Length: 192
Image 1 (tube, rainbow, N blue to C red):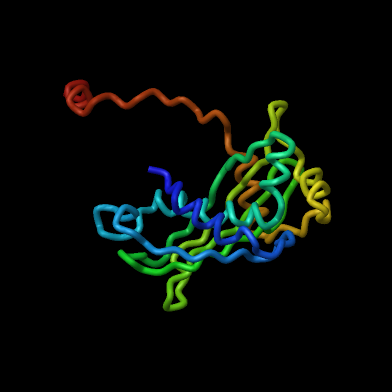
Image 2 (image 1 turned 60 degrees about the horizontal axis):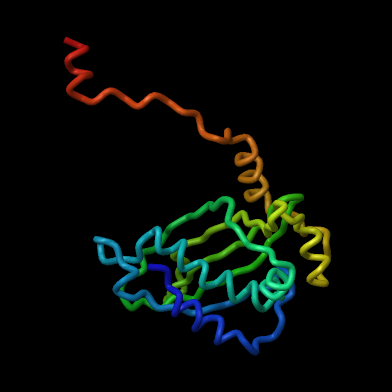
């Protein structure tokens, strides 16, 4: 189940927080609960992506993005993610999540997020390709930034992010439809 109560708690905690300029780091703190675990008793890799929402939404609120989207009737979508997992997060581990906007292009905003354990080790790191959307389609990030009173020209994306963007642009969509492999028994029968 989506962690609605945890999200509500995070939004409550930042209700009076100072505005967050684009590029500044937003910090939230979390605990790995039993319902976050996988069969190996560690933070489930899919749950990591869900928990990153708990860092993005407070950042969006502090930046004024949530208020802008509500006023304009816009939405917010994740269009891609690049994740690196490095350290296990176990039951009741405390995590500090750091979130920031690192830049944008003509279609997408790129958000960097990381989870840090109390011993100072980075457990995971992700970059999200996101879009502000309307009924008519995607809203140009430069327009969003302008409406937020932020510079509309993006900082230069780090080289490794730019290479990911380039790889994503070269990736075919929709994916190629390969015929399903023959069942093993049929394959053995055909080989005989």
